[in-house]
Length: 344
Image (cartoon, rainbow, N blue to C red; front, side, top):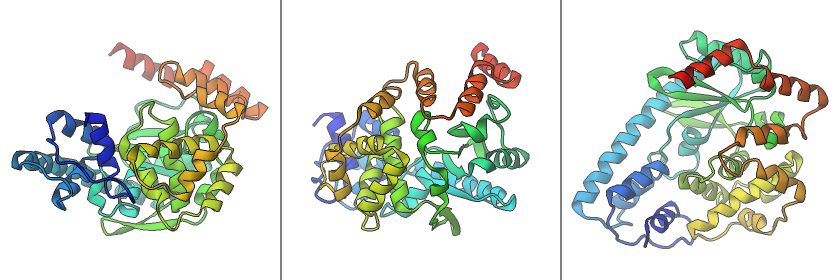
């Protein structure tokens, strides 16, 4: 079994119908790849429960790597709770997204889900106030806004450097480019779900919306998605609380059925039994309009320009003007920060 097949097998561990893990050596390269794909926790769990037989030296190395990843996760959770408290004190409604939320919501043990930053969603009208509250509380913004209104009108997220050297992505929507503008943002704040995080209650999305977000992220995020993110989508798709009709109704309303289907199709690599929502994704026909939109996410080089051009087709004319003006004539602070990062 080559390294990629081994990683896919690991990502499918514990999913309905997935095959058993073969007793193969865990080389340094495989251990590093598992960490890169956020699968170190799954690997440690498989060794601990006897699903994966390894030599004593491998067991010790896997345990050390997992312990290091969990230290980082605990720091991230601590800083996430602090950010949540700042936002709550400022009266800003928010939802925890991605790694921290999914670790406590869909994984059998939160220690199975490693993550490297924090993600929080706020309403578009609250973005400026949320950034201001966090900056006042000690956050640092490495790249200023493109314009005075860009964050609340057009940004996917604002990246802040937060306590303990952690990164906090403050989201306005779920994706960059045209599909991010098609998401109906009010839908994201309906029917919140509460999860316990280090003894504290935080609000997150219901499972249906986590599934849609996870699939969009797999399809439109990194050109080669992390298998840990693919595993998240498969785990969400298998949850009894995920309703196929609700998922279909939402993605049709958002005009994002195509990227959601692509993200769900990526779970085929894990070798598990397909859920109804995954089977729906296999049968979806991608329209020509969606094919053109999806092309702007296809590779990293030139991606920002392609997404900006594709976004024009889904924005109203006033927003097009403001969006184009911000991209063509960014603020002086933004230009200075970007020229400084290049010169360093």
